[in-house]
Image (cartoon, rainbow, N blue to C red; front, side, top):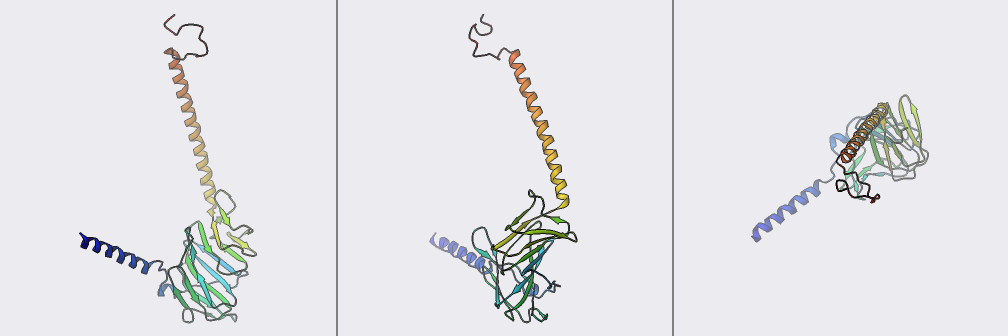
Length: 248
C-alpha cells in the first residue's frame, strides 16, 4: 500500500514539474523570424493596429535596451505574451530583425533585448475578436486602430478603458487616442455596425415575447378567478354577516 502511494505521489510530482517546465511557453524561433510590414511613421509613442485575431504594435523606445512584455491576469500575476515578427528600427531608419535582437522567455514574461537604447520596437501578437486588451509597455501617448467597419459609439456594446481618450473614424477605421497614458493596461470592447441592428432586433423580439407571455399569464389568472367564482370559492373574508355558501 505504501509503495502504491509513493508511486502515485511521484507521478503527480513529475506531472507538476513537467507542467511548470512548459508553462507559459509562447514564443518560437519560426514565429520570431516571421516577416511583417510595419507602419513606422506613427505619431504616438505606442501604436497598435488590431486585425482579425491579432494586432501589430509599434513602440517608441527611449533610453532602454530591454523591454518586458507580459499580460496581466485576473489573479494578479503575469503571463508571457506570444510575440512574432519582432523588428527594431534605428533612429536613422534602418530596420533589423532577429539577427540583432535577443528574445528571452520566462514563466511570466518575455524580455526583448534590443540592439540600441533608442529607436522603435515592433511585434505581432494575438488578440480576441471584438475584445482587445494589452498592458502598456512604454510611457507617453497611445493609439489603438480597430479593423474596418468596427465602432465604439454604443455604450451598451462597447467599452474603452482607461478614460480620457478621443475617437475618430478615418477610412472606415476607428482610431482611439490617449495624449498621455496613465494606466497599466488598455482594454477595448468593440462591435460591428450591423451588431446594432441585430441587438435592436433582439430587444424587439424579447419585448414582443414578454408582451405575449404577460397576456397569457393575465388570461390564465382571469380564467382561474372565473372558475373560483363558479365553484363558490371566491369568498370575501371581510364580510362575515352571513353563513358560508351552502349553509344558509
